Image 1 (tube, rainbow, N blue to C red):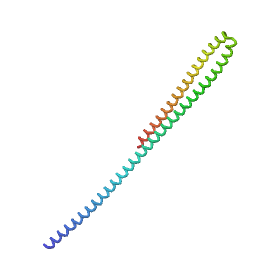
Image 2 (image 1 turned 90 degrees about the vertical axis):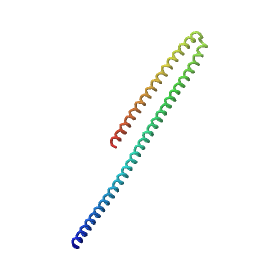
Image 3 (image 1 turned 90 degrees about the horizontal axis):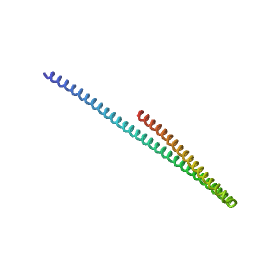
Length: 168
């Protein structure tokens, strides 16, 4: 009977030892799994941070391009206005010179020159109006062209953003 008890004790001791080994393996697997999950979480966080950084950089690049376009537009607008002002000033000087010539001729032939001067001033006004209209038309055309170019560039930027989102 003592042998039976000893055998039972030995069998129970072996079972206990096996259970402890299994428990140690389970703990080890659980620790490895937790460690792997922690590493995965870290990687996800790093990926998320990287993605946000890329988005931020892309946004800053778009803002920079928009500012550059606005600056170019403003510079072009200033240039056009300066050209228009120069042309107007030249026309004004030319008109002034013509009026002085008209005054000299008026002294010689008052009546005939009065009618001629009146007619010349009307023609000058029409010419000036026509030139101003041409300048305005060219300016509008340039502005429309710039807007179309900007729209095309914005569409390209949006397509790039969509492709980047699709790649993410």
